Length: 313
Length: 282
Image 1 (tube, each protein chain N blue to C red):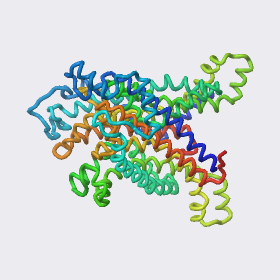
Image 2: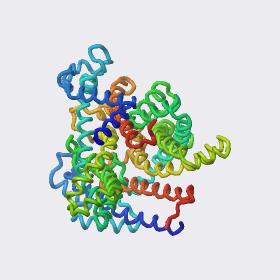
Image 3: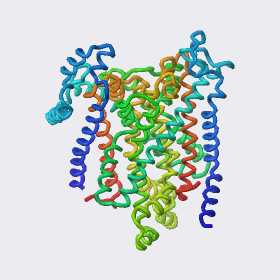
Image 4: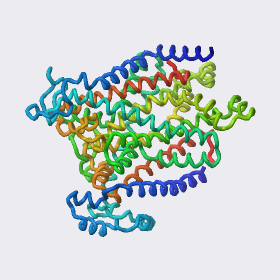
């Protein structure tokens, strides 16, 4: 298990290198680079060339790539092409907002989704199950940004309970939490829909198993059957799937941040696209994919912890 | 004969599942509205009228008007075309590339399989929205480009499914029999593998269309969708967001349109999945 953990963690490095390389070359195919974006369409040929020289974009792409990798190995992510500030600094500023949002969204999703899923499975084909299924289908059909606007309209504009936009002051926990509530629920409700569906179907699978019938037959109380025999086994597939939803979580956080103007990574990425800020864009995209990888690794390892039958070599 | 019985059973299961019938009916209505948009929309979707700026929903303008005085209802009807064309187009695109990749990887195994699978792993670590954003940032806006962007993002997912289905099919006796009588690999793939994995892919197809529609709306919402003034639900919501206090209808109605469309395809997908997995059948 220990060896497996080490190996999986080390495997992240070549994969991330591949991701970095793909992103690096893809975004440099773009016609009209950051110099044009920064100076506008009326800039003269000469102005553009001077700025490109300052940004280091006049060198051959391969040279840029080698410089970039060398910098990366020294722990430098380069400077933003637009603000000229170190990318690492900008990311450090934005990251807490995104981490707050994704963690809160996931936690809310698990806290609401797992019980709803179990409840539906236990009441299979009765009214609560029917309501739960339709509700979760509504949830997965709702784009995060539309749900975000609905919540914003009701709770911020009409009821005036929460702030409409912004991320709050990072040093002030009260303000940070106050600004987090609506975005966290936006993401959390969507995650709840996905997680409750998964929990319901894996619970239904388990309830049909022989060992559950055996447990009932030998007279174990219904409570024990559900919580000890069924639930623990049903949570195994649910855990892995939560890892698979990491992508949905990350993509959803980008849209939620835009709706609520949270100054996180997602908002940073969208601005980087518009400004053609290669340095910022490639780093943010790599962070998002690294997060997906990492969450998948964590769930794989959790899987082994929950299910003693699984052994990794 | 057996095929006819099976087909009947599938239709029966599908029809018995009332929610999926609702989904099919809703989807048909939405598709019809989109096709008929030029004839049934009460106004020109790009015709501006400054005098009518931000007028609230009324009998003359069912969903109100936007900042240019354009009729929101007509724009929603026309926007359905963009959503559906992108949703269906990008799934078809990803099938054209994903199915052959997955089938070859699954059937051939060995090096072909590990190359395709590594690529899939790398590309699937990008969330679809972020990958679409990257591709559109490279190619610029436009409807064909969105189809390509979402299609490329979905391709590894379809390849993975096709690979999985092919792997389990490869061990079937009839494939072995075909190989024993000396049929070529190409012939086996076309005659025996493709028709049999198609069911699995079709089941997921409705779900992917729903996903693609949400991704298109998301990218348009971010501002990377179709070029204005072509109406698209996502960009209409974006424009409405800035007017949420004084003209909430501008984001509410297009949002409802996205939700209903995606919901109908998800209902269909649910029904199809129940057919594929009898364990979950209600």
